[in-house]
Image (cartoon, rainbow, N blue to C red; front, side):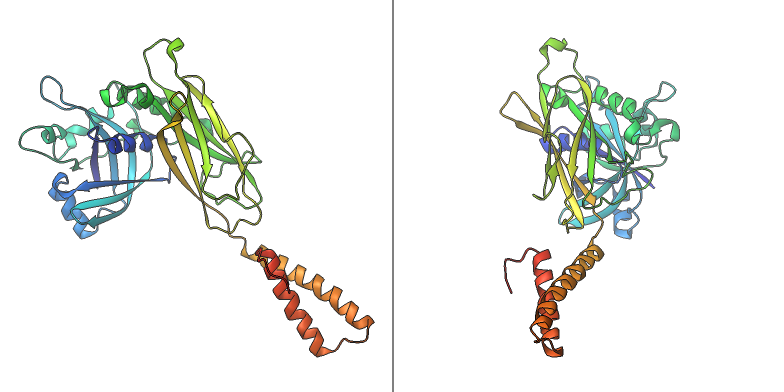
Length: 355
């Protein structure tokens, strides 16, 4: 089962969803919401039956109608539905990023899909109304899809092609809306991808590199270029930045990297990173904000090993003193053991207490 999800330029949030959908690497999520009046009856029936989950979504931008009255669309990204819930008069969907669309045999993805659309998207702009979420009776074939290229960036040609198409619309006509980013990969110190072929958890005590590609479509001369800044923000203050948190996009297209380290004491199961694109000429006005949620390997076993080592050291030191003064017996040994264990736990978890 496959669906066509349309996002117009009617509100800034809709445009932001289009930008974010291109920026995500596979496995990251985009949340969208549609009022039920814009959702086709077939989708509503599938949602009620619980068959929407794991289906394919082609997320697309719906442009304004031409002089002939017909609307045009740009297929932006392929997603998989991870969750679909009814909330009041809306459907809230959690979409997992997947492949990128590309032209093939001189046919665009939208031209390939529209003949299979249950409802033509132009109907929504006409008097009788229509749907922003509708069924497709046929998916895109492999010829029209490109998988994420991770470190090699083999998807970037398709990524740039989509950006070039979007740039023709007034919603993306302002200079600050023409810069798009693609998060490529996360590499460890051995240059091993943490995302390909399978998503791996980050390890406390290790450092990583986040690779980001930016692309700007503009027909203006390069001397009119206005700089942008891209900033990486960690939601946990423990994260150590090993490179500049903010880099400047000094050209229309380039690859940037951000280095960060997870401290050995990191305890959370997930690490949240925010990638913020700003206009460097307008007091850092935010253009796009992207949230990445990365799994972190739990270090509970390592903690207990450290606790046992610290406990053993404290017990050895105190019992040697007691033995030298002939005060060691089984009662004092038990007290020393319990006190040493509590002190080790307190020290490891940074409790501001003394025993």
